[in-house]
Length: 331
Image 1 (cartoon, rainbow, N blue to C red):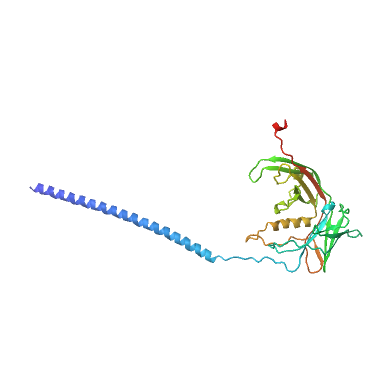
Image 2 (image 1 turned 120 degrees about the vertical axis):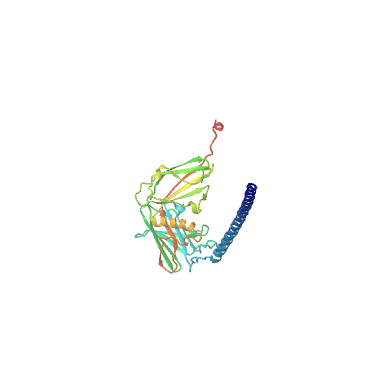
């Protein structure tokens, strides 16, 4: 009897313990679910807080931004622009005079036709007068048979209103331009399909190596800002003997003319700075536009002139690009 009562008490204890264990397990499961819910809520709140913080920061930055207007230089008074070329080829000899415009001014070209223009040889009585030609809006030599000679120094004189301008230049010996060749190239990265021309020649000079190449395609001068082909002897001149390739993709039946100039260093510097000016877009990180350094001096008057006086030999060659003939068609 006592043994039975004892066993009954043990069984009751086991049931109580089992019930307690089940309740504890259920409570633990409820706690875990509650923790998951809380964690999810925290993640959601955190994402919303991040979005709010990003939005607030963006609005703050925008509100702090200020439009920056950089003042561009304005032309004060009258500024003549002189573009003078004196060569050993009569057709290239001319002087253009126009009035300067502000950098972003789009008004039309304003030529000056009432100036007195002449080129002379200092220390001599040799003088070459010029006359204004309305058709070309430039000054041409009165005697077009007179041209520049190698080794001679020339002086440009311009009188306009109360102003007097002077510039000088030495006629240098020309380099040699032997031949022009062309070859068809397939399209590649950064390179269009077409015929590419190479110029072969020789430059034997040890100093005054400042050159420009002009390219004329079918009677049209390529005169964009990418078409100022300037080079000197900074990296040597052997590449001219090995073939100087023009970075243009020409087409079959194009007639291409190459003109090579050799001029003094101040003119080379002028064109180099002009190219830099042409690539200035007026943006916040671009240097402010400024005029290239001129080799023209203002001797008298208040109107400071800009531009250049170039004395140079002319070397010119042309090539006609013949269409490739298929081998089957040629038989």
